[in-house]
Image (cartoon, rainbow, N blue to C red; front, top):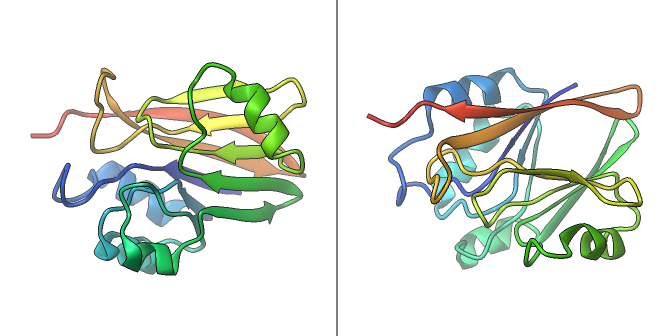
Length: 167
């Protein structure tokens, strides 16, 4: 099962549209995960129309209309892998311990907010993934998203994709 992980799309404030590479990945994926900060409903509608399956939550920049359509924490089990999606996890310092305590029944936690790619594993085995932002790199050298594979009850390869600079 192929997953696309993204967050902090911030359309149309940070960009008019997502990069074509990310749209192609979304079209090809079995599951698309978005960890919030959509900013507008049109982006959610576009993801919903194109993704075979969408697992998503709202972020701190998402207003009442998006919050009415999305949970604060989204959860799903994909081929035996227990997944949760949340926008904010707090400071980087102590993140693994804090998330392991807050999500003891989860195998993979996808989060956003910082726009900084993150891939670590807590002591209890919880995998924490932040795909960065495909539209707003902030202090990072590239805009990014992730892909991941799930099969036979395990999270397989996770790849961070660097997007080309916008024209």
